[in-house]
Image 1 (tube, rainbow, N blue to C red):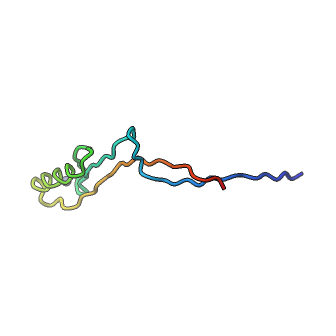
Image 2: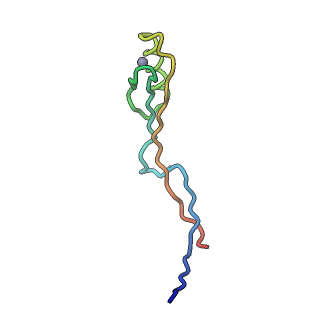
Image 3: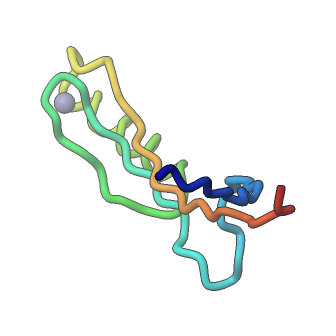
Length: 80
Ligand SMILES: [Zn+2]
């Protein structure tokens, strides 16, 4: 015997979590040449400053990768 089931689906919208108690967005800059990273922090400028200081000591380390940790939250919407 085949039973038929129906399911209801809900629309969700994925958005950056901007609630007051959300985890802060964190930035860290990594040197692609040697894998060293600056300190993880809430200000992206700190990573840029770290990279400027790093390239002064390692003039051949010219490529960097910025890692951003950002919390997201699904916002429930209408049932369908
Ligand atoms: Zn490096």
